[in-house]
Image (cartoon, rainbow, N blue to C red):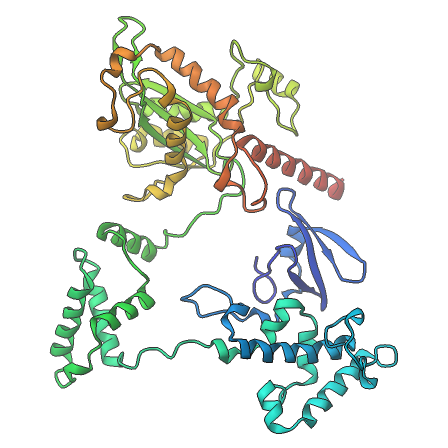
Length: 520
């Protein structure tokens, strides 16, 4: 979250400075849009996140412990990066900081060492400022070689103020010399001429087929021979050095050539950024797949194939609508699927009370009166953005016109990028694992895995399969644990599509109550 200066971290335990006063984030409730602060003196305040976004003087509290490794590693420093000698020197520095703050080397009176507290650091007779001034004078009086060895020659009053706010491992890391874990010095053999050659080869390889590092090394030699004729050949880096430099500058690679080109084109066009979905209906993914179960024609009882078209909400991973069509789907089927997303699902024969409308915020009686029938436990909403692939039915002018009339933004998935609609692809796999593979007439995921005669095993008609899938979605899918798809604000909690939709309804209700109180 952008603050007055820098980025504000709202994770529990993070620290903020508001109007010059430091606060600690005790708890955050993203589902209700509120968070709780404490100032360490017993005072707590609860505010909406909107209040923090518009705060004129909100800044993060920076500390020496925020120093990180170089960007290529992506890992923060830890005590494991220090040698035993470096760790011992950091502990001695931390003991000096704790003595100035508390009067005791271990930071606690119940762990006082013999002779503690010393007269200049007795908390009963001295103030915090006096103890800090005494510590600064003590460090300056140390012999030069001892102060340099411990790194205390530059210990000043301001440094003690900053370090006093830390404790535990954070204090040890802040007392460790940053040069102990400094950035690598690079490669001496990579001169400016070699650098130009590497980037020239990188540009040339972008439009060519995938090449091994051996071929790229030859191209570097060729570029150097043609561009810098007087450059000594023996000073050109070896293939192993080029491999390390290539990985440091451009990443490990490994992507297929056409995927790398499309990703590069998307990045240059500014459309390769990831979308953050934070409410139901914000993005709905549509996709179709052959139904992996053979069905029986209701007229002639012949085995037939069907297509499953699914709409999946990317925030809750709910499946608000689906369609089963014989043979392949059409633009009309997809348009009717969007219609089903916006309408409540009626209760069906054999469905009990556990499958009825359960969501908070809107009573079931109101929904029933609005719909004209008893409503099942499946969310419905107007989709804001629709993500589809490049199949014929999804590019039809008729479907595009329907989406325009409904007010939907059209966000086609990039070609050769299944990750743009990975959620619905995973949903198809989950449907097959949880339901389809257990039915008679299942064809499996591959022709080589197909049974002897799945057509002869088919027993379900299209109507029966449609009722079975609807029952599975309402009773099983909407209540299954999401696992790795749990929301960012509750990584350790168990959530299902129904619980996420209920949390969104509670958030809207809380926001409505807040507005009614504020504006009367």
